[in-house]
Length: 139
Image (cartoon, rainbow, N blue to C red; front, side, top):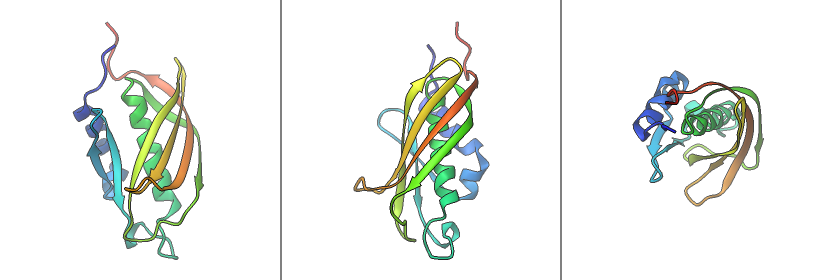
C-alpha cells in the first residue's frame, strides 16, 4: 500500500486554510508524520483569556483527519466529541497527539489529545470519519 510522505501530510495541514488562519504550526514528527502546535495567545482566547474551545476542536479534528490521510484514506467527519479537562491559559504551548483506533473500508474512528510539552492532557477528542476515497489509488 502506498502511503503519503511526511511532506504530503504537511501539505494537507496547510491546505486546510483555517489552520493557517489560526497560525497553528505544523511540526514534523520522527515517525514521518506531523502534529499541530499552538502557543495560545489573545487571538485564540475566549473572554476569560483561555484558549477557545472551537480552536482546540479544530486542531483535534484536523489532526485526526491527517492520521487517516497517513493511512492513505481521505475522510470527512461524521461526528466529533471533545472533553476539556483543564483551561489553557494564553502563553501555553500545546500539541495534538492523534491516533487511529479503527480503520475500516467505509469508516474510521480516531482519538486526539491536546497536550503540553510535559504530556499534561488539556482536552481529549474522539471522532468517527467517513472514508471518501484514497489519496493514492492502489495498484
